[in-house]
Length: 248
Image (cartoon, rainbow, N blue to C red):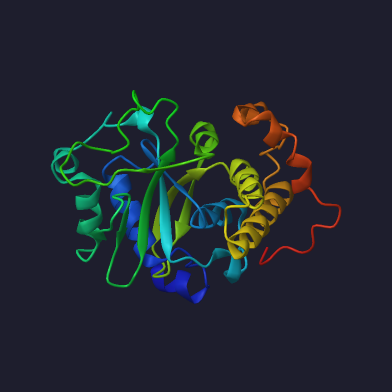
């Protein structure tokens, strides 16, 4: 089926991202301790809705892994305990090397993998922000605003990578993604080009949810984990003239 999928233009997920997702799933990390956030989540939402976002919105050269420390090491294989997340990533591509800061690896093609987590409420009693105790393993960068995504519902879909092979993606709920991107687009400490892209992604995902995923309502009680200030902005994700879909 892979050649057919390629011929039909169904392959969307970058090959390296797909390989990482498969390894994380094999280690029972993806969908438990780790979820995919950021631009790669768009491929999951595409698969759910049956279409494609525009290439400029979906283009990416990195993958963000959201770590839920509440699920730390609940199910960890011997290989993961010994090698750590960085060892798992190296099993995908041996050229991955950890960068200064400890939360990011990069390979020879300059593809980045970031491990991120919510800000700790108590720095002194902070839970471990690393998946394992392996020496030299990645330590998640703590970023404001991610607690909402950790607590938000999650979704799963079978997408197709650029080779035409299937890959299961576990991501944050597209409604939470859209609200979070809208929030990011207003942050003054973020680069203006990124803020513009954040807003474009927020509006595009919200539009796809409303038009093609009617079972995911923006007034659903599952979104009550979001701060009230964000829930009050949900109306901004429903413009009077949303414009055409990309490739739906």
